[in-house]
Length: 105
Image (cartoon, rainbow, N blue to C red; front, side, top):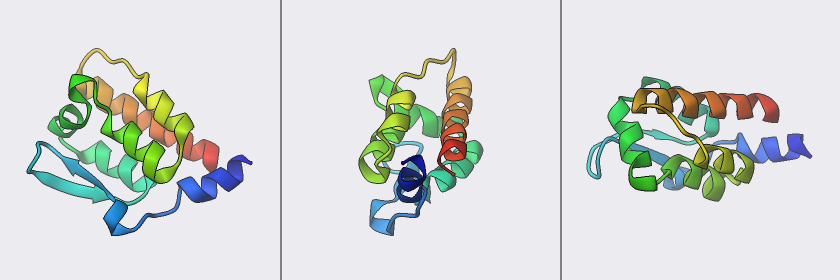
C-alpha cells in the first residue's frame, strides 16, 4: 500500500501544479514539481521563503503536499511542526520531507 502511495506522491506534477517558492507575494525564487524537488530547493532557499510560506499560522508546504501530491500523512506532520526560530523550522521541514521520501521509496 505504501509503495502504491509512494509512486503517486513521488512523481513530478505538471508545471501548472508546481509549488512556487517565494520570499514575498511577488518574488518567486524557484518552483518545485515533486517532493524531492521541494526538499532540495528548500535546503538552498533563503529563510525569507520559510517565513513567507509559514507565517501567521499558514503552512503552504503542507497544503500543497496534501492537495496536489495527495500525501495527507506528511501534510499533517508538517502542520504540527514547532520550532524555536525560522532557521530551525526550515531544517525541520526539510527533515520531515526527506524522512517521508525514504518511507515511500
